[in-house]
Amino acid sequence: MINIRGRLLTIASMVGRCKKPADVGTDHAYIPIYLVQSGKCDYAIATDIKKGPLKKAAKNIEKYKLSDRIELRLGNGIEPIQKGECDAFIISGIGGVVITEIIKTSVDVLKEANTIILQPTYYDEVLREYLLNSGFCIETESLVRDEGRLYSVIKAKYDGVVRSDDDLYYYIGRALFEEKDPLLNDFLKRRIDIQTRIVHGIEKSIQRDEKAYLKECNLLRKMKDSYTQFL
Image 1 (tube, rainbow, N blue to C red):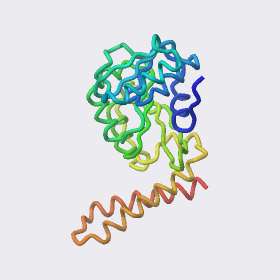
Image 2: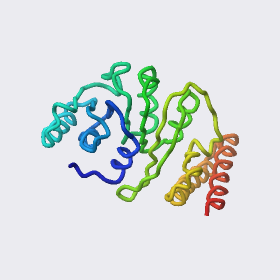
Image 3: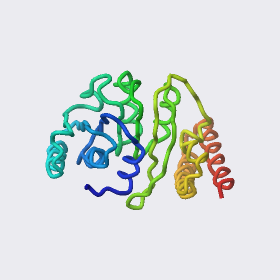
Image 4: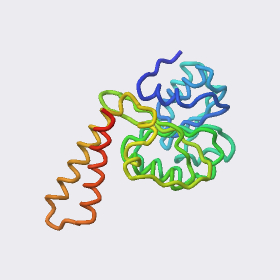
């Protein structure tokens, strides 16, 4: 049995039972290997845009004797996956802007999925806002610490309901507050530090955009208020 932990284990644990998941940008194929071995699915597809990672993935799949149950495909994002072929999708380890573009390109494929697991490395806010504005429901979120850094893992599904939210919850998922995630306190502190630097940067600007400055100040205030309330 493959041993995964931290970020990868959190992602895999949130997938749940499925028929055929697709790990988009699989790299080493650890997640699909784990999903098949743990009985969460019978078959899986692993894609990557580069041949190098797929060769590495093939070696790992062969090592665990799963070549007949995990299929590798070369291609950009979700493009190698046909509509209705997979019921779960995993897109992890890349920025929120890139994940958003991948979803936009293949939104019709993702509309039919039962589960979508997303793990942005940064620009989480861009991804959350797009999901809510585009008919996707964010079902839950979980924070995980991996090699000293905090990551948010998002579980979503398309339901066609267009939503909007306070900008605070684009930056820090609403579900993290609702479920009282044990790492939320640390995550809030990190976001406050980042937002403080953004505000100070605008303050020092010679040609300061007052509207942008007030917007960033307001967001910082909301983050600090949330931190105080969550303590």
